[in-house]
Structure formats: C-alpha cells, structure tokens
Image (cartoon, rainbow, N blue to C red):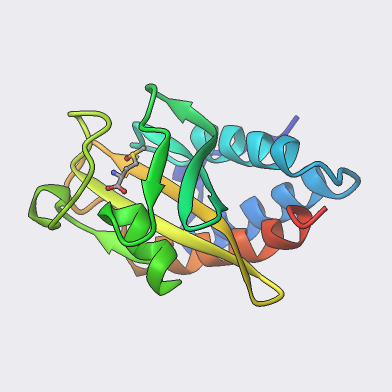
Length: 162
Ligand code: SME
C-alpha cells in the first residue's frame, strides 16, 4: 500500500515525516488499538532498515504485556522497571541503548539484539504502552531515530485510545 526507500532520503528526518503521514493514513478510520498496533509494527518493520524485532508492549496494570510485533517470539510480561522496556515504562522516557549488553537488567529475547530503542506511548496523560525496536547492529539508533519514533508514537497514541 505504501512504498518508501530510506536510501533515497538525504536525511532521516524527512523519512520519518513520510512515515508519520503513512501511519496517520493507515490508522485514520480504525478505532481498534490492536489492529492499529499491528499495522504500525508491519510498517516500521518493512521500512526501517537493520531491525531484528519491531513491536509493541501494552501497559496493563503495573506490567507490560506483549502486543503486535514482527520478529522472533518474545517474552510476554515485563514488570515496570525491568529491562529496557520496563525502564521506559516506569520513567516514561525514551531509552536509546547503543549496547544492550551494557544495560543492567536487559532482557535478551533474541541473542542477535545488540542495540535497542524503546519509546513510551503516552496519550492524555496515560501510559498506553511502548514501541520496542531491536537491532543486530551496535549503536544502530541515533537522536534522529529517537525524535522520529516520538513523532510516530504521537500519531499512534490517539489511535490506540479507542
Ligand atoms: N530487550 C527488551 C525485552 C523485549 S525484547 O527485546 C522484544 C528489554 O530489555 O526490555
């Protein structure tokens, strides 16, 4: 339905702006949160290079529960405060980890993962979940990815609220 080529973009910010437009269009008329997370995971997986896992954990009570994703099977429940995802949920701050093996408490779902970016999804003051991106390349994510993923989740957040 959408076709991008990241190599055609001079800068990644432009790529993320187009990704935001695609995500907004994909989720515009759909109120179902799981359906919107599923399409968002597929869009990100298809167009962001060098990922080995891309998907969502939903905030349920005081833990994160696995949501729609692309990649290998993953751990299902993560208490707030544990690992990279749990830290993002507890602090509501993005976690950009260049070397997951140096992150205390990192939960290794896929032994290939070397770096990770986790973006909390907050809408109307409520933590709805996190976007989790894993890469087999150390230092894969930079500040442009952090800003771009924050923008993507600002689009998605209202589309998860039902
Ligand atoms: N590595 C994550 C766990 C989730 S998986 O990567 C899919 C963490 O430490 O929170």
